[in-house]
Length: 113
Length: 236
Image (tube, rainbow over all chains, first blue to last red; front, side, top):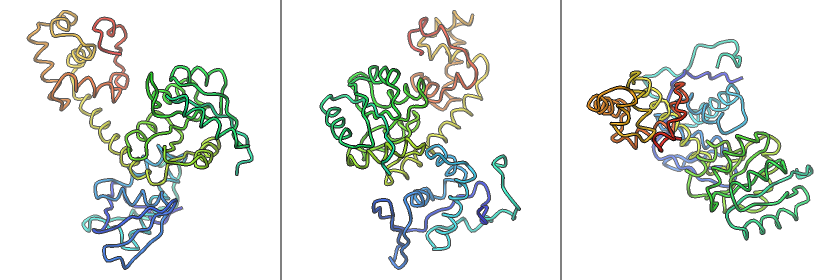
């Protein structure tokens, strides 16, 4: 269970100058100054590619469910964890005017999604 | 992870490609080939009779394409898993394959080992997408969904008479024929047609027809178009 729980409609965007280098099943992500490097699996790298400031987390989740045999709640948790990790590493940001997290809730069931 | 024997049927446009694939796969103990066919219709027929676990279809066929083959197999034989083999530099083939229900996609640059891995992955119920193409695929699916939502909303703004006129347009009927069918004057029919194009946000009747069929709008709005194909020769 993700403890992030981002607000619906949130549109993360990549910081300028991010470079994504595909290496087999992994991808190396580096910042504009090449001072920070992060190794991600290709699913996480695909999520980063979708962070364009226009695409919502909901849209990412729906597209992933169309491609992979995964439940929407599982896909959401994976996407939110990935975005939280990318935000923490400084590769992704949110519009500063938008509060990014939901109020904490005890649990999420499939029927909530 | 190649212990389980998976049965495979091959479909592609070139017999030489198929023979090479069949030979290469035949050397793997974990995969059994049930034959091949160089046409879409023949591939679909063989899937019906031989019931493979996985159908491997190339993007090019002389009588259609791998996407059509994929869509036909998934519609008529849902338990059969389908892998489309297509180009690595063109996301559009991959996006079309996934929209047609493909369970996996392998590029023409991938090795036989990659293909065998993909066969085993999809036979276990997972999907297989080349990692480097995943971002482009997700982007394409998101763009299509946005277009789809937009088309749905624009169609919903059409009035009852406009929808009836649009059915005639999509059947390939001219203004006179539509007017006669709906007991309208040709002038009124033309006015409806202009309003339809404006509301749908398209510039021509051809674009309007493409939008309707690409997004399956008549079916989604419960509009029956049976019989119009013969009348106008345009609709399917």
